[in-house]
Image 1 (cartoon, rainbow, N blue to C red):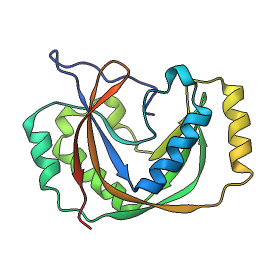
Image 2 (image 1 turned 90 degrees about the vertical axis):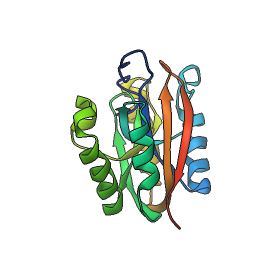
Image 3 (image 1 turned 45 degrees about the horizontal axis):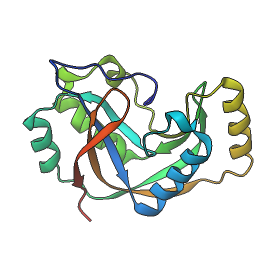
Length: 175
């Protein structure tokens, strides 16, 4: 899961992380939960849905993402998942799976094992806690959870800086 395994450095350049950009209202909801539940000393990222944990910082990545012709799409938040030492919202969308597959096929030779394994889209709101804290939060959030819909509006490109991320570029999806 994102937040679990740090991307490896490649030839002295920070690797790129690709995340899905959410509509502003949904982003605010997940950010607020992350502020509430993530250990404050380790919460230096906003809530995010990671597509790739490491791609090379090369022009071809930016060019490919810029040239994608993808419409904004809905994502279904279908439930919660236990991350062991954290909790995330499970996300489902055929459009999301198709988008990730398109990018993965283009950059297959660059994918690290973490990005080659099965893709389980999620948005983490607690991590780097204890398994007991995660179980308690999962039970608490599950008690009132109702499925809801959020919107994908773009792709964000980040540089991994050994903990914090630096935002590099946003590629908006077509509306």
